[in-house]
Every structure is written in structure tokens, then in C-alpha cells.
Image (cartoon, rainbow over all chains, first blue to last red):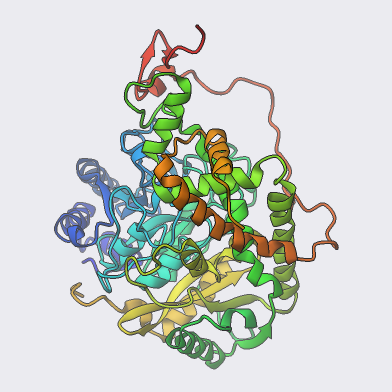
Length: 485
Length: 95
């Protein structure tokens, strides 16, 4: 049952092959029995899930056609869930029980989905390996000595281990696409402003975006239909109609112009990864698409620009965590300064503290123009690279990551080595464009991801291209060894 | 470029983050490597750009000046570390 996609589960529920209660119990047991090996779930919402499944079964019996009625999902622990702990992977929020639901969570409730629990993640979404969580690292189901990627490592690992058919995740510099690639699943970061950020704990406000993870593009389309909405409570949310992302999945890709950025295939890319990606691009040619070499000349500046802008915005966003209204508070503060300083030193892990300090430095008097101002200008150069490219091509494709999953601790004490993991994904966030990753190969028993970048609000075309690839290949059906299929 | 101890201490004050003396050297070292990465930005030629702080062309939406939220103080304060009579308690600020 855990090998069914969401699409197949919806069909099975409609045809009364099984009930929502049965599916939910099945996934809850799997999480309880198998997740200790992966540590992908922080909080299991068992009672709630069973109750919600019962309600869903009653609705289904009445012919209720809510789009995800009875389908279990996991939510990344960055989305506020009313009455359910939302930790953001941090000690700072270990005791935080939000009194409201994020818009994304509410959208899922309204569509009849069942919440199984909250997934593990890099602390405050800062990381590319899920090694920084207060709740311990997540292990990649493909190789438990290796990282699942981050920051949405828990959601990705849970889907790879078949602990849930779908999950929510967020992406600021690659945090949906990179773990999707390293765990062999499909994940999509929508255009900036497509999905409401209300109730989604903020890391970098001009970069953050919530999106779906599942095993197929077809399933991601269903989840995106639910997640995308105009929300007046998020002033960065764009008021633009949400198309039916499932409607055009079957379109042919004949004549599709695919841009291949030469900068994404230069030194630093693993040979096996390159081979898998190029063979996948050849599949698109077989389907009638046209490959066009393009250049995104400012790609090399994307990591430096990001590591000014993201920490700067994070330092502002994380200033709300002060021990006064919610979350961790240090014991016996001697005065207000001490309350703030010790609460934050105790509540935040090392990587978060480092990024706050970098951000503070880049925004401080005397440095603002040289760092933040300059980085925003470089951001505009990067955006222009894409605008020019999209005059010649419909989609851009390339590798999601430079190599497959790396072993725990292998990026050692060099933060920059870890930051370079995101080299292919970061520009997309800086430009606000949509990007997705889908499985396209296996190298040394570890998955490789193909990245598709689309023009603004062109998620339907991206999902169509991904779905067509998944009709002629079966990388997305591969299962990690030890996970029964 | 390396960051001086005093700079780290100033940043710690700005960010309200208590940093143990023992950790200052390690933090300085790590911050320096990130700043080296970031210094690559200085080589970028941005002279052709005009107004670039708003690269995403966003405008701030406005709404009517009407009260639409309900007061949920009790629900919000239920999770606070320390409250009294609807106020959040912190250590004494004024002597």
C-alpha cells in the first residue's frame, strides 16, 4: 500500500479498495516501526490522524470530492500547526505550540488531507544536509551513512522510505530540490509568491517558498493545486489565478526548447552525475524536444550573493526569538539584556548563530552598501541572465546537485564546502523563478536528480515536462535497498 | 581577511547573542572564510544597473484601514513563559 502514489491512493479510495483509516493506520505503523532508522519525523500526530481519517471516510461515503480527501501527508516542521508542536528543528522552539495553522496547512485541511506528523529539518531551514537539527540528523534511506540533503531532509527521507506518499517542504536556496535529488524523489519550488508564507516560519523573506514533495510529478501537481493560493495575509503572495496543474501533464514535449547552461557542467560536477543528466537530456531529444546551449554567466556569483542576502534577512527574521512571548527562555535572567543574550545563545545552534552574525555584519553601518547593497545588485544581474535565456528557450535543465549524497561529517569544518552544494539551485531562488528536481539516475547506489527551471509562473509546463520524462523512464520508481517494494 | 575579536563582540551585542570567549576564535575563523567567499562580489560589474534594490518589481499592497482581527490575547499568551494580568513579564528594566 505504501508503494501507491497519491494518484493511485485517490483512485483506490474512490473505488473503495481500501479506506482512509486503513491507509492512515498503515503509514502510521510504518513511521513508528521504520523511522527510528532514519529520524525523519519529529512529531507523530497519531490520534489526530486517526480521527481525521475517520471523518474522511464518512465524507468519502457521502461522495465528497475534496481533492485530497483521506490522503495522508507529512508537514515540514516549519509550518505552524494549531495545537501541534512546531519546532523548526530548533531548541528555541522545542516547546512552541502555535495557536494557529499556516495557510498551507489550512489548505491541506480544507482539501481533506490527513496530517501524519511533522518532519525533521535543518535548524531554521539553514543547511544542506539535515545535520544541524536539534533533533539529530536525518539518515538517507539509500545509504544511512549519508545525508538526505537539506533543509527538507526529513520530508525527502520519509517519502523515499515510503513513510508517507507526499509531504510539504520549503526552499530558500535549494532546500526542496537538493534533498529531493539526494533521496530519489520529485520536489518542486514554486515561483516566489505562488504559495503563501503566512505561518511558515521565516528564514529569508525574499527567497523562502513552500512546495510539494512526492514520488512523481503527477502527485506534485495534485499537491501544488492544494498549496498554491492567493492569501491577503501574505503581502508577498501574488494575486494570480491558480491553474489546474494536472490538466496539461499529458501534453507532448515535441518542439519544447530546453536550455542547457554551460556553467552547470563545468568543473566540480561528479562524472556519474553528469552522465546521468546528459542521458536524461537525450531522452528529451528522443521525445522531440530541442536542446539549446545557453549561458548564465553570473552563476559563479550566486553563492556569494546568497550568503550575504540570506543571512542578512535571517538575522532580521530571527530577532523575534527573544524568550519573551514564546519559545525557549533561559533560567534566572539577571536583566533584560541577559534574558535576550542567553536565551538566544542557548536556543540557537552553531550554524544559525554563525549566519545571524554574518547577516548582522553585512547589514551594519559602514558595510551595508558594500555587502547587502552590492549583493542585491548582483541578484539583478542573475535575474537578467535568466530573462535573456528565456527569450530563447522554454525551460532550463541541468543537474540539481554536483554529486550524489555525501557522507555525514564529510563537509567538515569548512562551511564554504557545504555552501557550494547549492551552486545549481541558488540562482533560481535569487531570481524568484520556479525550479524542480526529479530522479534521473543512480550512481554508486545513490540517486541523481535532474533539475528543471521554468519561467515565472510556468509550473504547469515544468510538471508536464517532468511527467513526460517519467512516462519513458522508471528512475522515480526505484526503491532504496531494505525498503520493501 | 580576518575578523577581530572586538568586531565579533560588537556583532554579538547587535545580535543579542552571548558568545563564550572560548568560541570567539573559532567563530572568527569561520566568519572569515565566509567573508572571503562573499568578497568575490566586489569583482562584479554592476555599473549598468539602475534601481536594483527592488529586483523583484514588487509593490506593497495596501488595505482598508478597518479592524478585521479579533483579540486572541488569551490564546497567544497561553504559551508564554511568564505573564500576569495580560502582560508579558521580563526582568526589571527601570530601577
